[in-house]
Each structure stands twice: as C-alpha cells, then as structure tokens.
Image (cartoon, rainbow, N blue to C red):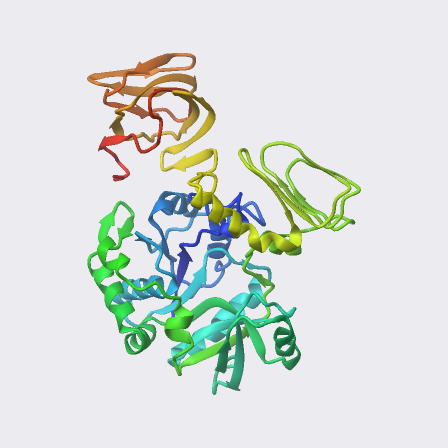
Length: 473
C-alpha cells in the first residue's frame, strides 16, 4: 500500500463569508458546520486510513500560530507548516509542497486538499481517494469530479472520457470547461458525464513537477528558488519572500490540469460543498419546519427560509423570509439570501475606504492568547487581555502610548524597565511611555487582564520588539 501525503492548502480569505470570515480569521479556521473548524474537519476526515501520512500544511504567514494551535487541539502533528509570505494561488503552493515532499520521499503520492470544503460522506470520500491513488501510481494527475446534483453556474466542470485501464472508478479527462450559464449547466447535468471541478487532486509529486516544468517553467523556477531559500522558524518553514513574491500567481487548473495529457478524473458522490457563500451554509444546515437555519441566541416569529447566526447577542426576526442575518460583536450583516455572492462588494468597499472590519474581529488571536477591544475614544483605548499558562508577550516598547494593567484573575509577571514584579487579582501597574516592558503568565491557569491605553496614537503598529519567543518582527 503506497503512502499518501496530504497537502492542506489554507491560504484563502473567504471574503464571501464576511463578517464572520475576515483576513485575520478566514473561514477555514472557523467552526461553521460543527464544533471544529473546517481545517480541523479536513484533517480529521482522513483518520482511519493507515496509508495516510502526517499532513503538510501550506498557509498564510499571518495564520501560522492559529493553524498550529488548531492542529494541537485535534492531536495532529503536521509534517511541516510551510508559510507563504504572500498569496500566489494554488499552482505555486502545490509546487513548494511537492518540492518539500520530494526531499524525503521521491515517489510521494500527494493528496491536495483545500482546507475550507465540507464533505458529508467520509466513507465515499476515502474510497475515492484510494481510486485516485491507483490512477496516480500509474502516472496520472488525478482530480476529483463531484457528481453534480444541480445545474450550478458557479463551478467549472470536468467531462469524463474513457475508463482508465486497471483502475476501477477512474477515467481519462475529456475536457475541462469554464463556469457555464444556466442553460449550459442544465445540459451538462442532463448529459450525465460532466462533474463539478472540486479543486482536489492526487498525483505523484515528481509527476506534477515534471508537468509544471514542461507547461509553466517560470512558476517552477520561482517556486524552487523560494523553497531553496526557505529557513526554519520554530515549527514552521518560511519561504524566501523575494523569490515567492516574484512567482506568477496562477491556479493549478490553468497552469497544469487543463493543459496536461495525463489528467484523470475520479467521479465522487461525497456530499461535497465548497461553502462559497452564506446561502451554501443555509443549504447544508439543519432547518426548522419553516426552513430557517439558526445558530446562537435567535428568536423567530412568522419568518421562513432564513439563515441566522448570532455570535454575541440575541437576534430576533419578525415577518421576513429569504434573509441572511449574521451578527458579530462589531458588525451585523443583513442580506437577501439570493444576493450573498455580492458580499465581496462590501468587503471591497471597506478596503477602498480603509476600514478595518474586513481585517479583524474585536477579539484578535495571538500566539500567547488573545485581546479584545472594549471601548475607545479620543486618546484612550480599553482592552481585555488573556494570556495562556506559560506564555509571554514580547519584550517591547511604545513611542506614543502609556498603559495601565489591572489583573482580573490569574497571576502576571510584569517586566517594567529593570524591575520585575508579580501581580495577582485586583492588583495593577503602570507602564510609562517609552518604557521597555513584558507581560508573562507564570501560572497554570489563564491570566485575564484589563489594559487601559492612553496617548496620541494607539495603533497596533506602535510596537518596537526587542525580544520575542515567537520570532515576530
């Protein structure tokens, strides 16, 4: 039985699921359909396959600590976590993963999975993986074609060709086709030999790199330079920033799969959904007798076919239908359920207006814990801070603000200039502007604090780090 190396691609931003999905906390890191995140479910559904090796993750550098923590929570130890300094689409991401696998396993079969898909039938998915592995062992670049249930216009399609000799359930690819209009999509559905393009693949790393070199040598050259210039950083691998930024941004479909003569497709009826918009979550969610899908503290009266998610307070709907309502601590989205693909337009407007609601939530995660904005005004800001047991913030200094710290629960070790002191519940300290300082939790329970900042400028970029166990700049 050939070993299969999962490669999990976790670089997306999921803007169509705003306001829950944001740049600092994208959809793959969120618990959207279960108590675990989509990323955790992606890794978890490979359990029970003895041929499956530890996953190799490729992710945005800004998400590295959250991904490492989520893997720790489910007991998964990644083979490596490769950090992209910028997003360059899937072809370069898969290329650097293939190069990493080739270093230790020249004949590696790599299973490429986006981190943000939903798959309802895990047994059928695992069976499809094994069929694709047989095709890959013969030198094919296999993709998974989702059995189309409806005439979707938001997906590309794959038309299957002749069956592959000696591989049950796999076919040659006759054609890749672009996203169709409604009438064409219905023709594909009626024909019965077209499948949705899932964006999941299985092939030998060496075979993929061979095809990439033949079809897009520029992408391979830049990816190889980025990987050869990579450096270790704690448990992560940082690609060379300049080399990777110089790499063309291209999807693996355009770069390789649509051009290679070695493409194969494994039809997969696996209850798949790419969770591309809030309407997709409504479709897969459990609903009440009136067709409402709700999560959180929600009250409905004379309401039907709505998707409602309340994160921090009660949400009530009266006499409305076909809405998406998503409440977070700082934003409420109300949208027609048939218009949720346009949420990206709102995100684009926020970017243009230099707002921050598309970037972070009020609660912002850090490798040491989290902080949450409580109040702010002219020359002041108030935050809640939680530091995990045994963790500590960087030794730092601010040019423009002073800070008051009050311990709510737990024990804090505070470095302030040349002084080090322990603070416990209800005790406080003051950090003058320009003073080197550090906050640590030496205890075995979480440290919870209130921080009051005062000064002329209170932005998060007013931090000068002198020492940091997480090796942040």
